[in-house]
Image (tube, rainbow, N blue to C red; front, top):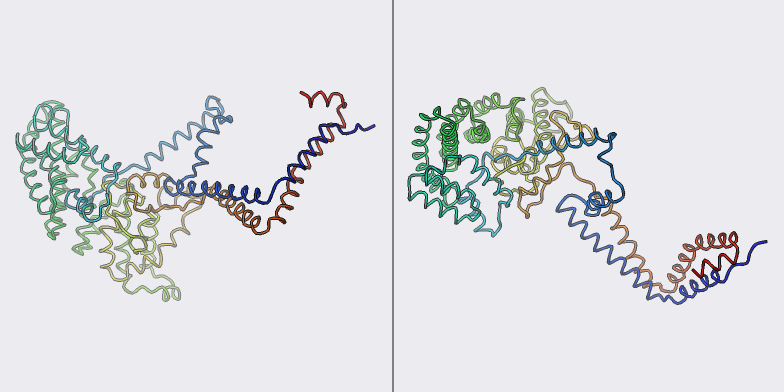
Length: 524
């Protein structure tokens, strides 16, 4: 015999029906409107966070904080030791892939970057970029024995100083004591407001630097301290000569600049100091030879430096593509090529363009002026947006000078992406494209620049979810406002349907349990 429903069950049903009957259409409008507003605010915040950091805030919090609380992977278990080691190896690999390099064609901070700031009111350099430059200067221009010479001791502190005016004042203070090459370098880089003024200061630095180099060269074998001094003096001398060559290039004396750069390349090959390879002087030489339209010498430089043992760069890959395109671009026609097929020379040019685009897929949009250029940073990330900006800033004119080269690039560059295997973990001609470039480029490039991202990231699930939730609740609020009575009926029917399984379970529980026990439980 089935027990009759208890008084608690009747009380629950009656209170629920009474609650639903007392709800007015205004309540549903307020409920759906508030839900739409909250989900809209979440959507705006998620979209802003995704555009700035490239990831979903909710997903990041879930992975970082909620997964360990809910019982994430136990790193102490032996079965997961290999996986954790693999993750550590992959993280180390990504760090090495995203190594930041000094821009070989970096501008002068006083004569170019600061002038841009005076005109536009925008800062072209980020704090991260300038901090890397400060570290480079301390590596290039200081050594452990600087405290023995008062001027070098002052400059050692100056390179660590964050305030530009304090650095300039320290350089003047060092010059009052003696002719200090590094003090002239600082003034030429940061205080000089024109290239001619910077060149004059670098010539004074060269005179002082050559004297220090000759003295340290004679004493370099007398101990580790003298060897460190000679290494520092060598770095200073190479840096000064490279900047003087760049001054000549900017002032229109290109042949003089080429001669100085060739001498520096020979000097770099003769010396065994590893820091000299960081200057990448051959990229300065390539740009100057292209300005002279001396394509035979450009090809000779590429043959020497486009080697598998050297780290590739956009300058090397795209210059090689430009030379191949130059042979066929003036007569290239996509319609004719589609009818008769590509010739051997055209195929070589297209393959060279595909090779360059695979190495750095961001460059074509700047060369084709589909994306606006900004001043290049002082440091670049190979295969990243920062390297693309640095390359296009100086080499766009060389592509425009070769008739039909940009047209050939425009017709063929997008075909590269059909050749790259999917997923992108598999490379084609180069190593797989690193996944950390976007984060590093956002640190190197100013906020007003929209960072180019490859591959394009799909919108995170939570952005799509909040967008759908916001749209759905906004539609409900509008319908409830326009048709309050009808929507009220729908809402009551929906809530009744929602609570129907709960009522069914309660009835089954009451039919199984004795009425006296159920009464005692409801009292508790």
